[in-house]
Length: 516
Image (cartoon, rainbow, N blue to C red; front, top):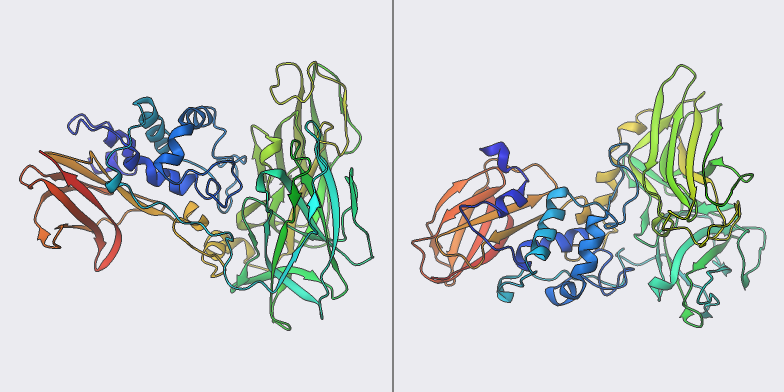
């Protein structure tokens, strides 16, 4: 009985004894935890999903995206490698939303809905040590073509600094496809032609629109990227088609270590897997393989992966190996999507010993059957920097290896960083979340209180029920691993409140309504 009920709450929703109707109140926590980090009024998604009134107009699109595995937009195969802050949804959570939509997406009692999450403009708290913006700029993309512009932004640093975090905040988030953030010490200049597709600075800073980048900056691992005093921020903005004339002033918020901070290890970037000499004929599928060796004279620790191809790429595979046959998985993407590429930060540093080679495979589909093909009919496609060309350019951030690196839990280190501005259901809850819901709600004779957590449930948790006056009510309850089934036939009609406790600690709470 107990194992049947662990985490599989969609089965409990359909439990015939309860004969319950799933309402928005039952699935709101899933939207908050899995969707709202991007789908909020300050997020990068095109519409918010933080309340019933926001969700209900988009139920057809939501169902389609879930059924076709387009949302949440997470590309790496989690059976191959694991990363921090994975934007994933469980099968049970997906089915719960689809069941709710299929049954007419009822709202339920609004007074019983869990509170909507609150998101601020910024995801990192505290005061940045440096804030710079690109000058207000009228985007020069067109209705059919993207634009690439490079901005050289003075930093005016009084001394060398080491970056421990960076947050990128476009003022028109949907207009910015991606940003390449580098630093320059040679005096390179801005290029606002809309075709600035080649130049990058000498110092690589990882930049992600989906979430801020925090380098590990607390024991047992302190690391970051060094910026010389005479450096300037040198960023390439990729503006999406259809935003011509809109004014952008993207903001870059940089956090530094104090001057002289001890034991900080420098982060570097490399691109061992790249190929600039291939093409794909019209109506052709092609597999391109790159195999190379770098840094054979010392061990390294990989921190993140950044694969890159364009629109007709369909699959990406990266791994390291040695001649004896040992293989180290690095990244596998089974359904490449040009619009959702990102940096992927490993849950643990990945040690690459000396003598290992890097192996990359990209598959391309330049046929009429590829829905992502930018041309109809398909055209001969060369390697190039335009988004209608193709690329094979897979980068990694790395450190010089120290013994024990591979044992460091980056997931815990990064998500517990005090820099996170953790408002309600903020980003860290993607990997560390806990919420509960009641069904049916309102109830009559029976109800179920389900707890959903990223951690294993506590077998000795307890339930406390109070009425609207705060008086504790004794209710016959059957306790399971992550849920309680209540016999409420003896309760008077009205509103009741519950708390799930671990000792004196309140794990989660909510309310339910009894009707007759």
